[in-house]
Image (cartoon, rainbow, N blue to C red; front, side, top):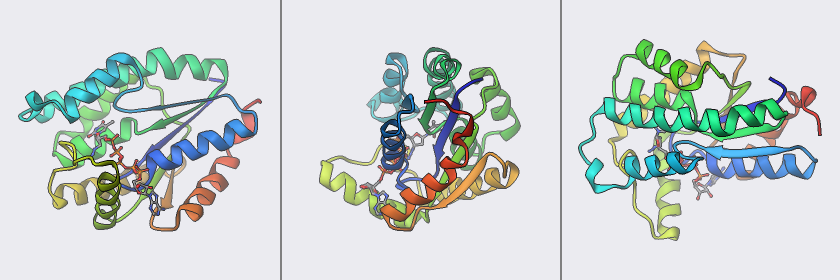
Amino acid sequence: MKGLFITFEGPEGGGKSTHAARLALRLRDLGYDVVATREPGGTPAGEAIRNVIQHDQRSANLSSETETLLFLASRAQLVRSIILPALKKGCCVICDRFTDSTIAYQGYGRGLDIQSLFRLNKFATGESVPDLTLLLDLDVKSGFMRLRERNRKNNAGHDRIERESMMFHEKVRRGYLKLAGKWPRRFRIIDAAQSMKQVEESIWAVVCKRLGRLSR
Ligand code: Z5A
């Protein structure tokens, strides 16, 4: 594939959305063709699924298996209609969450069988794997403090998964760190407790090393 596929991952409030957007801007300023997207969502069907998972009252009692399949349905559509076509054209694709979220949240967090989730991820993505995964790592308490502050400013509440226990989110964070240990070439851990500027520069330093094959 000609393009470059970068994913942002990590526990709540680490700054994924903020830094995915900043990275996209910075690359576009240099003339790179960038497609920025997110999970769940990124397509009309995916955004509808996002709403069902996060905010629809009827999803209050979703089983973990149902929740997993909804995330995978959103992903399957996103890969085929946005990610693969953009990579084939030689774009840089930046995705806010991807396959590792399913392993961290539904696997390590909810306790579903991790090998089955790897197989389901393969089915959903046709085996497209990110070239680089930036894990914005932050302790759970600090992440939730940031989210509370953001939600207060936006007058928003916590969504269904954000309302899970601290223990759940601790398991998710540990799960991510295990994944980063398993694929050290693909993952880069970014200390998200640093200032906004320091995080941005840490990300930039990592990304610059991977831009070689991308044309402007
Ligand atoms: N999920 C899943 O379970 N399984 C899956 O397969 C997939 C997803 C794909 C998606 O939620 C939920 O779906 C997510 C996982 C689950 N669940 N939870 N809980 P989402 O898309 O709505 O949100 P998120 O992906 O979890 O991101 P977030 O919690 O909204 O946070 P963030 O994107 O990492 O952070 P942010 O919005 O960029 O920053 C948060 C605030 O902190 C904001 O006010 C920033 O200005 C501030 N910030 C950011 N960086 C800094 C620094 N360095 N210093 C100070 N303040 C900062």
